Image 1 (spheres, rainbow, N blue to C red):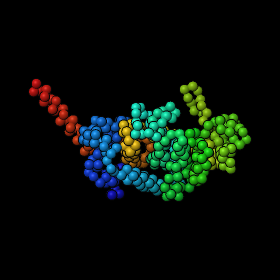
Image 2: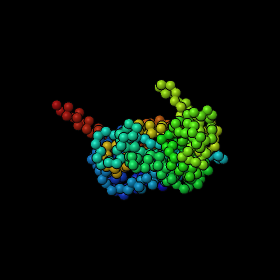
Image 3: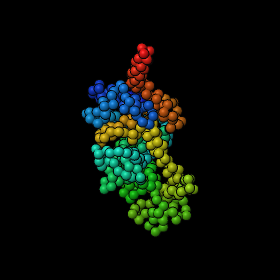
Image 4: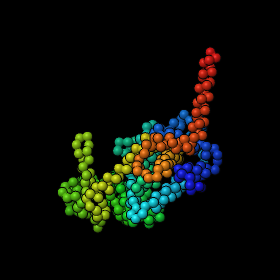
Length: 369
């Protein structure tokens, strides 16, 4: 691996090396080429370099090591994270761990996905809990878990499992780590788990929760009050609220902090949770996250990981292409298409040659007539 090469190319090369068979290397390049078209819907059924049936077999049946691909993605993410932090002199940007759940709505029968297909918040499909790492302009997904329905670990417990799986070297290299989550993760086990891990939580909470004195949060009059919750004795919590504009007026949202902070700091930190919403929007609208048609669990996992890989490659390209990154959210469509030309150019060229041949055949037939 050449350290002078752009990190996006190094990641791409390491991914290809992890496949021992040339057939698999060619297929994954075709898949990434379709993901990097950044249309939000990888058109795998129209693939020409590899047939749709070959792509389906690659995702659902062929024996290749998905764990090896994930390990490479994580290794490159850690390397880029530490390199990014070393650029700063003095105080470095704080690491923020954002957890949230996104629903991938699906219609039709997916009998092989039994245990994964559920209805949550009015959406029927697969529901994924993701851990998103943010540190300044460094913004990458780390891992995800799939919610398996009622009677199984809740999304909050899955998020706590993801937090516990954070590498030791990352936790030891940061004095204060913030955990950001919305009100769906305000359960007692989650808050207790965040405190036990030594993280500082900034978590949304419903306004009807009561304090140990029996007062509901929505009845509090002073921002930044120190309170205790009945199910979390001995854990001091500071609460604030913000007003969000809605179509019908304004809605009050509450945020709690497990560390003593000023009201302005709590509100400002709590709002940064919305960065993961922008990530979800980009992942779905550009990289086809959730637009899978696979009917096997292995196929779905592989599809989701390749979608995240496409995002990661583009993020590295964005960081490498600028001396000073002033914007964390570029034009993902233009960026992905640039990466596609650099890394998967031969795939696109082969597709264009096939289209040109088909067009020439049609024109020749017309002229003969």
